[in-house]
Amino acid sequence: MRIDSLYIEDFKNLKKFRIDLDEKELNTVLLGQNATGKSNFIETLVLIFKYLDLSKPGSTPRYPEFEYELKYKCRDHNIKIECKKDQKTERFSYDINVDEVKQSYKSFFTSKEIYLPKYVFTYYSGISNKLKDHFDENQRNFYNKAKAKGVTKEDVEDFRRMFYVQLVHSYFVLLAFYTFEEKKTRDFLSEYLSIENLESVLFKFQKPEWQKKTNFQDEFMWGAEGLVREFLEKLWEISLAPIDLLEDYKESFRDSSNRQKEYLYLFVPTKEKLQELNKFYTTNTELFKALESTYISDLIHEVRVKVKKVNVGNEITFRELSEGEQQLLTVLGLLKFTKDKETLVLLDEPDTHLNPLWKWRYLELLNDIYRSDSDTDSIDDTTQIIINTHDPLVIGGLKKEQIRIFRRNPDNGQVVAEQAEKDPKGMGVAGILTSELFGLPTILDQDTQLLLNRKRFLQGKLMRNDITSNEYEEYKLKKSQLEEYGFYEEVEDRWFQMYLAEMSKYEIIQQIEFTDEQKKMLDEASKLAVEKILKEMNQGNNEIH
Image (cartoon, rainbow, N blue to C red):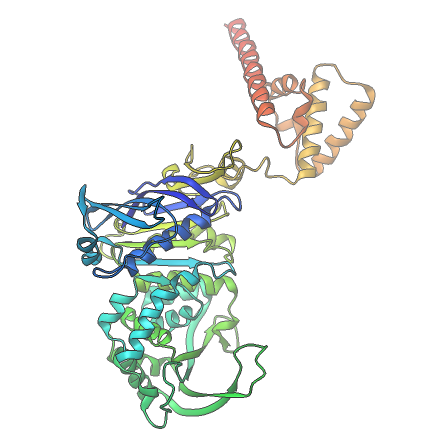
């Protein structure tokens, strides 16, 4: 599944907004200052596919509250979907074409499994629930299925197109990793998280909200059925000391009532005991889906995982890992277990808590997930990953085709998304930060840059014999200060000094930030200075010959 382009008529700060992506690329990274619409763009994609997923033949179509035109490729079909609003009736409608052939509502949504992505996998690192809330209705369908007759393996496939990542998933990832222990997984956990072993797991199950009457003593796991019941029966077999308790609970700190809820504790004492589950499940992905289905069915209250870390004497719980460790494991682990052909992956600042080394390697770690096991040079060409980041370390190895920069038009405030003009690859962090990609005026702190600019300005005046005695004393003082920081004039060649002498005729070079007019003026002045120096260089070469 690869998106080619998206037009949004009016959603939050995206007004008549169009973005064109390179559908040949696995990764597209969104850059831009805060409040330029990057997260809003990701939100529009979530809403578009949410309502396409909820729409069914024979029922009223579902629409987001904005007009759009989406072009994408899925399972070798070129698809264009227009969501239009009638200005008179204010009703929305779909206009859908597949391979340039107009589709009826019924024909398209009868074939959703062909025309929609297998998964829309979304992660958001912020504290707002704005994205999470969009997944509630899709998840509630799955929950209602559990209430009615239990979840089957087929239901897991049908109901989980829209997948929102939460912290609890990281526990399931770790359990699935260790149940089907592989060398590649052990190496990853050891290198990045310093985890050398899983020590024990304590499951705390709760009586689900959909079960109002039956207690645990009356019916196993409060009457859970289907795939969830199968998993719970297998977990029961490998666990020690099951404890069924009634405990006081509150919905929130405002809740003053004294209510009780029934809980069941199951303890898995060792990794070896946990690995007995691989007698019942063929892959770690299958086990992960069973865990996730049990959670959505409102049966899992908490999972307490204890791990052994390298060079740490005591066992620690997974919650004691750093935010960055949990974030890395959650996103990469979940992608590993949900990866499939025709997937759209939306990651909104997934690198927030990562250290610089992990940020530097992040895209390569993502690419590894989608590499073929048989051909390491082959990457899945049906999955698309769209990432929003503010860190130059993440994009250091990318091409310009993989970058979209979000900006506000200074004339009308309209948000635009444009391809980068140059490849970030090869620029280095300093070059990326001061390029159009991030637009920093300097990589130095403001005081040091102002000091350096003033010293260069005075140096140019000195070279032109246009410096006063007071300015000369100031120049010597600033030169001495900068030498303490490692800035030495001796490294500047003769031609640069001539260039500096020319440019120091303009006092504004002492500034750090410039208006567009000042930039244009300095650009012209720089060209004239270079032309003058080149002329002198040529004259010098002619004299030598």
